[in-house]
Image (cartoon, rainbow, N blue to C red; front, side, top):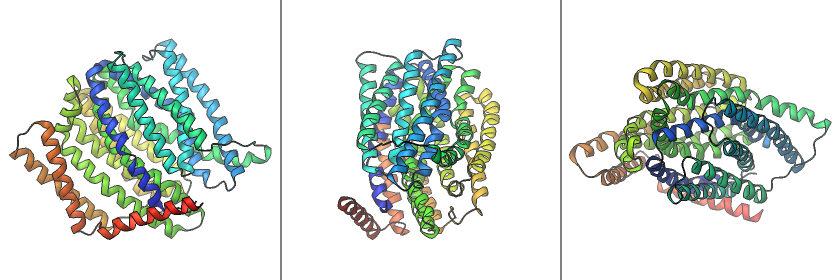
Length: 489
């Protein structure tokens, strides 16, 4: 599918606004309707489901996206989905059994157990459908369905929380309703098809599983990096501290992670396709271009979020949860390094060195556990946020070191990347000065800082010629050209 990346990028950017906004408006509902302890219990349940998802679906998705371009015909692509579906069936059943055993032994609070297991099954199927839409580059459909997913989830859980005064179960019902809709819409309109596989296809199955299975280890370590701190907080400080930490972490995640997802969703399938076509020069140009846009949006978002953490915490977080706003800048910087690491890792993925990715992730994961053990006991969730920052930075450094001489397709330092950092950094003295000279309510200060930061940063981008009117026109022209090509097909 030789479509310009602008076409994909346009739709991913266009539809990310709704998930970000609904994600922010969900937080006041959580913090006003749930106690810190109840939200902490919900966070532990979702952390457990995420662990089992690593074993049951996430590695399958990685392999599906990586090999989709390797399968040439519709018959082969159908066989790929058959392999993925059969594997998912086995792993999800095993994961459900594990959840049931954990619930019966009361290892953690999995209440209500039946609903949690059903949510696990539905969300796994939904994740596979979403991976297929990404791999096949059905961008309009994927973004439209994800937008519908976000809106439906918000409506269901808001209704249950406000009108029926549900507890954390409202979040489970919202997840189930949205995932079920995605399965129906994505499966039908996405044209998910399956084909028979036979003995002659064993080599394909072996390669598919051989690439994907090491990602169980990689993603398992990623879980240690991103979620295990909840368990350590629960063990050392209790569910209430987990709730405060998780909600403030979630606020940052809902703003920063969609930006990271936009560009990786656009970049990975195209770079893999160009590499398959033995076109490393174009693949490198694509990587540089995507990484530039990633920095253009992510760097000012991280700096801006850090500088308005007090105001945004006061506006979107209620009750006892508000005291955790101090971790917002720390987590924002940590997620930035996590995002950059995805781009430095692209060389390892192109070369299919999943074992090397696992080794790097293991070191970062061990770093995370050690610093959590050291810092949580003394500084609670603030210590957990610093442990996250340290381990993500280590992850980025190791990934860059492993890939700098591995492939011609890799991230290198360029002048325009440095100018982006300088432009965003210029916001710091301006926004800090606004805080010192003005004393308006939090809502007004938030708007003033956002407008001032965007105006200053945008002006510097034009001044340094990092973007131009011509570039914006070219972007829209190429997007329109990609759209016309699609219509002719």
